[in-house]
Image (cartoon, rainbow, N blue to C red; front, side, top):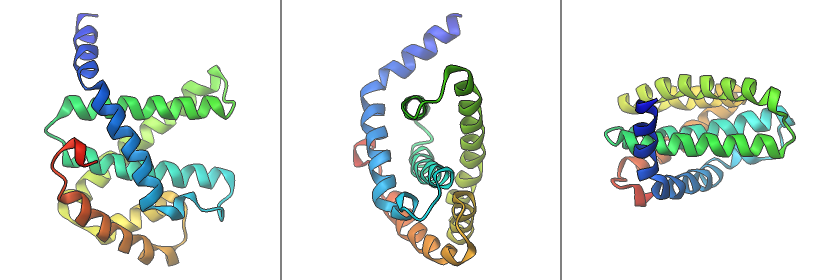
Length: 165
């Protein structure tokens, strides 16, 4: 109980920055990965592609700022609050909400470990393939997504403060 209280204090310390960064993540995901927001997906695939784009941008931020654990945790919490709010707006009920959020959390955790590994190693080709596969696109789009990854990795690697986002 006491540890939860101190964790919440630490996350609240970064609430304003986390909100700012979360807005930036959502904006950058839409601008950087327009294929994830295109209309050539079915509804379920569109949700998956958007989750993939948002996850990638968020994980890029978390990889760049891995030494600032409080800020990364606050951004993570804010992002999942947004996922929760979006699902509720789509009409997902309370009972189904916990199951969906567990799936999103597990998917995000898996992507966090894999993408961080690939971003740190600089293996952009494998990163493009992973994002394409997870987003539900066919292999022919992999080259296009890999090129986007090259541009993205070059851009984010130069960012040094949360306000750059």
